[in-house]
Image (cartoon, rainbow, N blue to C red; front, top):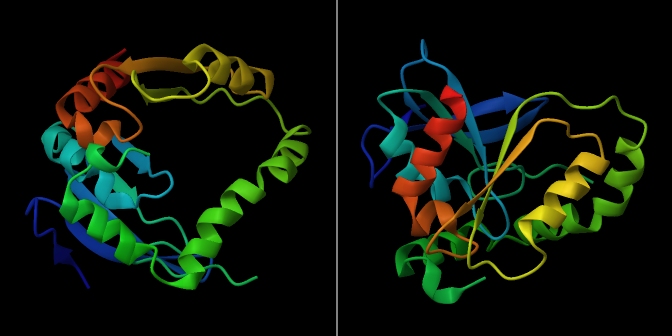
Length: 187
């Protein structure tokens, strides 16, 4: 069943069956155009990208999902408080209110050491990847992250710092994020 976004009517939501797991998909744009897939971080869900999707909907086919166990997606069996709006904070709190959502979110971080071991034996990844980060986000430099990605086989990565924002760049600066994505895809 398709539903419309209450904030951006051009975005529809539907459930996809992915290996037996129901995953919430937000979709906008023309399916005949190049597709861009957005994957949210923690503690967000697909709604983090709806502003960016609204900016890019005329030029691309856009998909954003709630990762398994988060928001409207079924669980797999076995920052800065002022950076995002009050309504989105409430939406994220609701998306992570279920114990399975928190377990899934924390599980991603707990799985990093095993992911590193599993991926050590994989072939290098040549798919172009755009790595966006807010310029004011604390932590390691973007160069350190990119060096780690390359060391682990991600060969074609373009890093861009989004000015005037922190961890929630897609929400804080959706126009700048959309511009960076459009320029990356065009190059």
